[in-house]
Image 1: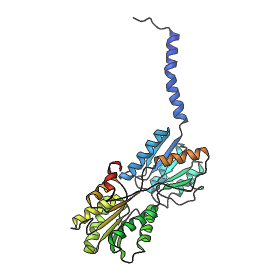
Image 2: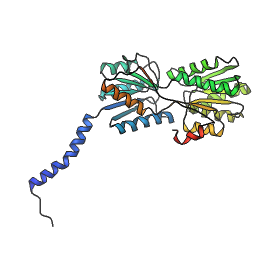
Image 3: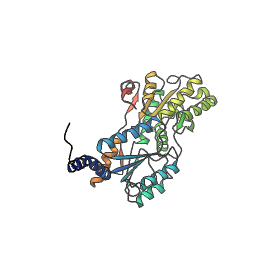
Image 4: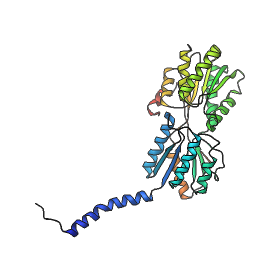
Amino acid sequence: MPPALSRSAVVGLLALAALPLAACARRDADAYVVGFSQMESDNPWRLAQTKSLREEAAKRGYQLVVTDAQGQTAKQVSDVEDLIARRVKLILLAPREFEGLAPALQAARAANIPVILVDREAAGTPGQDFVTFLGSNFVEQGRRAAEWLAKETNGQASIVEISGTPGASVAADRAKGFREGIAKYPGMKIIASQTGNFTRAQAQGVMQNVAQSLGPRITAVYTHNDEMALGAIQALKAAGRTPGSDVKVVSIDGQRAALEAIARGELGATVESNPRFGPLAFETIEKLRKGDAIAPRILITDRFFDRANAARYVAEAY
């Protein structure tokens, strides 16, 4: 049986055991806490974006606090105010709408908390209302979708457009770019345009109604994201059409289910809108902390998927 330890020895051992806990507490207290105001978490793209930010934060030793506005601009303003109250050091903001977030940006500015816009823009001035915008060139995405469709249809198409959330910068830009792209082809006309709010179910309902009213006049469909393309494809099939054959479908995002639909021949192509913002966001944060100059717009790299390469990238898609 080992000899009993003296009182002083026990106290010494307890003090040694407490050292790692104290060190952890100091690290937690000293951690650079970043808030992320996510606009919603009900689709694969948003989930992939949040996952990327969480993983990169953990990799670099940051603490990330995530809120979910559940698709409501008013709640997103409240979420940002909550992050400010928690005294985060910086806020990453994925705006639901271009307008409506001024109160959140003003509150962050008053609290001297820098804000970086992620994947969508909001009204304001870079370097004043927010640090910078990290995202894709959404206008160019629309143009790339138009160019693919023009080649596939020899510049002759009657197009149904299913657009994203009204008021969102990404929806406006993808609509603008697509229209610029088809403007060079007199035989390409948008014969109907309705919102699907970036959701599969709503887009399916929209496509069902449009297919009933326009029937065989529809020869092409352009959707502002893959979830809506997948919903539109289901509606077209239910209406007796053959997506990929008598109706060409083109989309934007690059999610796994879309690449699988390309491999099946139902979806023609999708322009990637890369959701993996983690590395770019935290590289930008670290530059800001060093006092480096930050450009007002920083773009992420997007690829293009069609039948020539979709199957090759399915395994790595989100």
